[in-house]
Length: 113
Length: 110
View 1 (tube, rainbow over the protein chains, first blue to last red):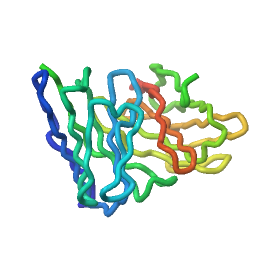
View 2: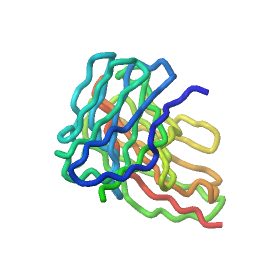
View 3: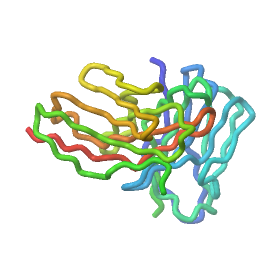
């Protein structure tokens, strides 16, 4: 089945540690995105990529890093520089970054302990 | 002023009623509009997209767009308890990023 797979679904991190969230899609979409969602808030864009080997900062990129070495994969690293990393992280993709619809993966819950 | 505004709710309707969810946006250049449904603890799923003024119907759902007044709405007919969720409005201007509202929580009581 085509879709977007995120892993892990739940992750606990100690303060000072970097963690990487995986996102893989088999929809042959060019564009991929990472959003963060906090309770009672809308989705905020962290990073997006329009094509392999290219990515752009979103609204809240500080403390995060990404790579896009393959079309199918867009991993997100939450670094120790991110002060409030506990959140629900959503990976998404679309055919392109134009007016096309964005589809989401199932999300990853990150908790700092 | 937020780019996309929604009443947080909750909006409570009885089963079988029409639920009306509203969204306003600030950028007149916005061209693409989307409604997503998000169940608690789950990721958003697309319900409707609309690009032109007027109504667009899909089953029990109708999206309405009024660019002059800068609002987009979602009507859910014959509401069911399974429709209870948070509904997110999202707006895009051309090739710009998609901006989400904070969502309206809908509660449908049996």
